[in-house]
Image 1 (cartoon, rainbow, N blue to C red):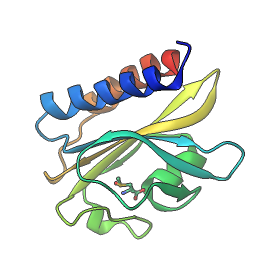
Image 2 (image 1 turned 60 degrees about the horizontal axis):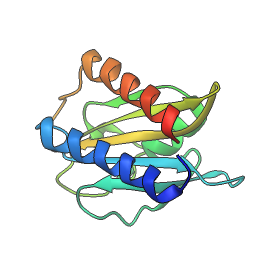
Image 3 (image 1 turned 90 degrees about the horizontal axis):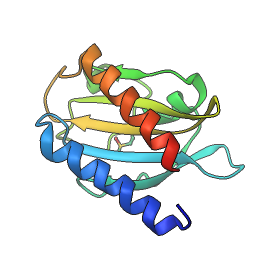
Image 4 (image 1 turned 90 degrees about the vertical axis):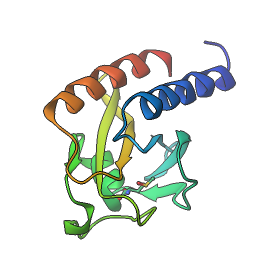
Length: 137
Ligand code: SME
């Protein structure tokens, strides 16, 4: 791909497909490491607009995944101390890192309005999605 617009369109299409086809995926978006800064920047997403377009490494579920390089499944967001609330309707969250040549470059972030909806099947499926995303970014 030779321009950022088409990459963002593809990423947005992925968000749209996921949100439209999996009923408990209610907000679907990408965050990417922002250059050399120790922060994440919001990429394409579908769902309610969020104020959290920049997230420092370590902050919230997303910021923690930026430093842990590991999946983070949150069955109940109310039970998390280090959590950034985007909407009061959100009950659960899953964040899966995206690796390019072994480097954690960003993540897919999914919020659910259903309590405790995410299974290992979601993790495996979203790891697969992230591996495909890694090839187009
Ligand atoms: N809840 C996330 C912030 C991003 S919003 O869900 C879109 C977090 O705690 O990192």
